[in-house]
Image (cartoon, rainbow over all chains, first blue to last red; front, top):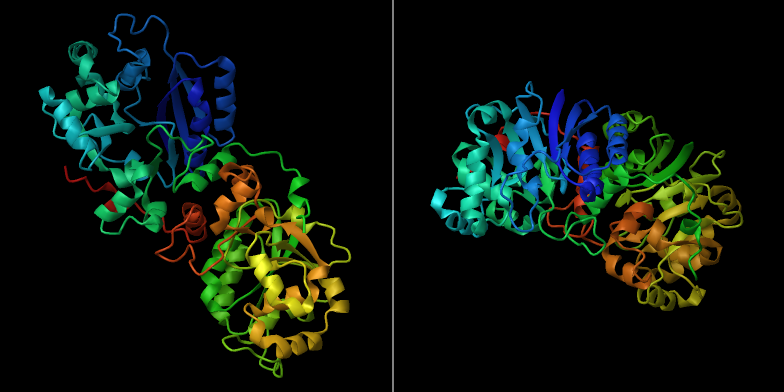
Length: 285
Length: 285
């Protein structure tokens, strides 16, 4: 099966992107991917390198470069560039014949097949996304986005997009209008906009399977009455999401999935196979 | 390259053995193994299953069944069966044409190539093994095994065996004699015997590369002045050894390499690829 994947990023995230892609390739030995890379600032040689990386696994990188002319009049928020609109308005820049695509953040590991999600029936929904089900975040965000009276808060790190419906339904101007009006309330602008404007048209996914926040191992295990232990997670969870500021490719990271991340990182960036002198040094007895 | 591996176990360890073997196969896509399984009680159908498991990766299981007649007069220790002698006297039961073999405990993960170790020049040594370099264990064991005045304490979980020299040098009777004399002092009989009788003929390996005790992450990192961080371990360590009573295939296990162990466990025991109903259950919004 051939699946469409969307990523939007700048050069800073090319390194984790490769780890994410490698983990995805690893769990799909019999599938290939068309990976749309939406960006404005990645260098041609970096795109070329990415293309070769994907080609070695039988997959294809399709560059979607967003020129200066786009979003020229869109309202911007402090600290945010116009890239904040890429995810929301990707449908405008993707080929007309695509009717679905799976958007993934680059700080994700794919640890099981994405097919059950990719083939999900989302007729009538703009997206499928994971609902953050825990007390706290969801509640706070409901209150924060009160004017729009949402009854859920979704994480936008994993989004199965119904492009056909988005083309009919999503109005760029309404998004800009919303941002202008509520800019002072927005923390994660694209995620907030998606929740405020479209929450009722989002198909809710179990976050423990499709957007597992690696910081929440204990709380997931407890709330599932022990079902989501490490064994179950490794066998069933599809996306491990390394949410938060601390990232597993940083030297000072620590966390339960650190070794696993490093494992995929090594697969993505294999070193030359050399006999390491060092490895044979006699311990100083 | 084709390499000889030795394991000695009973049916209880077949499960982790497969995980260990799978991790080894994974890191040697271009090598194969002759795996000698030395045992007295594994069922024929279990051996057959193991053979198929290895054959799928191009490797071979060679059964070395030790009959009742062997070690009939050997001294036994409380709680220990005659299997305690298998590792020490394996050379007697292995084909005469083998001159080296790598013994591995089944509670190990192989996370990099074993070739640099396997091809090590150990002329004049009976074994290559990792020296437990930390204050504590090594010191205590030196004192415990004082009569034999050893100056090191080696872990017998990873042993590169020089079979040619062992056949000339190791005297079964001397081993039995030692066990009779010091039985009250022996805690891990085979490891103690190896250390007491042969320590000076063991080629010392860096335990952080060749017999990494997963419980010691912090102490290794500190003693190496930060060099052995997670990144370095995943890229350079060859054997992760899940020492101690808590094992990563137990439900209540926790530790830094838990997710990684579960990952290899899943590779060793892949489930049928089915669309899990469960995975698509809508979160209760």
